[in-house]
Structures are given as structure tokens and as C-alpha cells.
Length: 345
Image 1 (cartoon, one colour):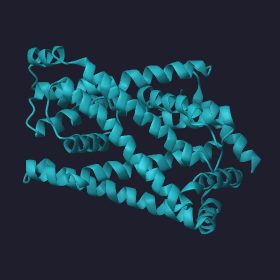
Image 2 (cartoon, rainbow, N blue to C red):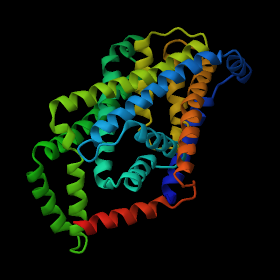
Image 3 (cartoon, helix red, strand yellow):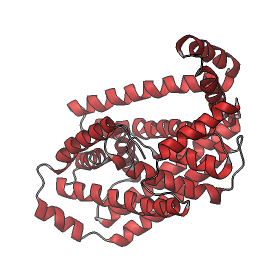
């Protein structure tokens, strides 16, 4: 899969900085002692909750895809796993595009439409993650009310919230004012794009708006929001399992706060799988609750292994079963499919 070189270089640089922050001032003898004492049975139990979350995530995607095409959940589950694998292996969260390509190939769902549903997923994930942080912000204020990093987290949360609010407004316009949105976007397309590209871009935009149809039903929107909450609650079950494996004691609300902040930090572009950013953020958050740096880093690394290896291995198996390999030029396939979509309009 072709990725621009500067994406890779930037990701490696950012990951290197955060890995340094994660591993600095660590007594490695004590660190290895914490790892050796971990009770891995708790991690396995946490993985049960995690994969329940993956199944709920599949259910949510099925709900979003229903206006485009009804696809059984058992058929979507391997595609979701492949998407996780893609995000963990390829730069720039390429697994999201990979899901759309596979759905186009297997069920002839337009890439633009399925990408719209994936963007909606990310929007609801962002809203849920922000809620996890903001609802527990009082905990952070009690830990270090006057700390400089507290003000930075608060500023970052407000900034991210403003971005999500802007994106939400655009989506609401697409949902409830589709004709007006198409008229405005059509004006920009006609003014800014070459004539030969206009029909193709207009066709892609129409399919994208079509992919948002499910949210025009308040009941379906509420269902998607509820499923989004369940996704992150189940994933927090893995955070709980790793906590028990290391003999730590934190409330579940504290774990939800840690999960929320860590996933906000993962918005920073880095190497695949959030290498470095994930580890430094998890270590930092646990340190706030008085956990020694070595034990906090052990927690972060065990959690990383549990989040990365099982779903990546399962996704890779499904990926190979679909007839692909890691050297397949998926970018070219995506270009070909999108070219076909533009031709159809």
C-alpha cells in the first residue's frame, strides 16, 4: 500500500519523541519485575470484554450501512477486524479506507457511501471520548488543580471539542439540508475544480451524503450513540483486566478517564498503532493516580500488547483469506473503484 514518505517520516519522528518521554527516568530492574509479576489470566478476561466491544462496533457499522445495503453482522465482523489491522500496520489510519475497499469488492457498496458511515463512526467516537474526559474532568482538577499540564489538557479538550462541533454542524447540514448542501458544494466545485473533475467529485459527494441517511431518523441516531458508548465501555474492560493483572486499584470511572485522555492523545499523528503517543499518555495518566513510573509503564506496555497483537493477528488472517497481502497496492484499487463510481454518475 503506497503512503507518502513525509507521512512516514513525521510519524516516526513524533513516535520517537513520545517513546523518549515514556521511557525516561525508568528503573528497568523494577520495571521488569512488575512485568514478570503480571497475572495474565486477568488480561485474557479483559480481552473478552474488548472483543465484545469489537462486535458492538460491527453492529453499529451495520446500522449505519443499512440505508446503503443490508449486510449480516457476521460478514462485517472480518472487515472490521481487517480495518483494525490496517490501522495498526499502515500509516495514516489506512485501515478505514481498507474497510471501504473490501466492502466495495465483496458487496458492491460505493466507497464514498461506506466512507461516509466510517466518518460518522469517528464522529460519534470523538463525541463519546470527549464525554469520557469532560464528565470526569473534576477528577483531574482534584488531582492537580494548579498544574500547567491541567490547563493544557483543558485547552486541548476545548479545541478538540470546537473542531468536533464544526464537523458536527457540517454533518447536520448534509443530513437535514441535503439539497442546500449540494447546491453550496456545487458552487464551490464549479468555481474551484477543472471541468473534467466536476462530475466525478459531484458524484462522490452525492454518495457521501447518501451514506448519512440513517442519521435522519432520531431513533437510529440514538441507537448509534448508545452503541458508541457501549464500544468504549467494553474496551475499558480491557483497561480493567490489565489493572487487575498488575494488582492496581482504580475505580472504573478513573479507567474511563484514562481511556478518554489516551485516545485524545492518539489524535496526534504518529507511527502505526499510536506507537509512543499511546505509551506516554497511558504512563502519564496512571502516574497522576500515584502509581510508580515503572508500574505505570508496565501497564501501558501490557495494554499495548493486548490491544495490538490479538486484533492485528485476527485481521491479518481475514485479510489473507480475502486474497490480499501487505504488499498489495490498495491505493491503486481505491483509485480504480472511485473512477468507476465517478463514471456511473
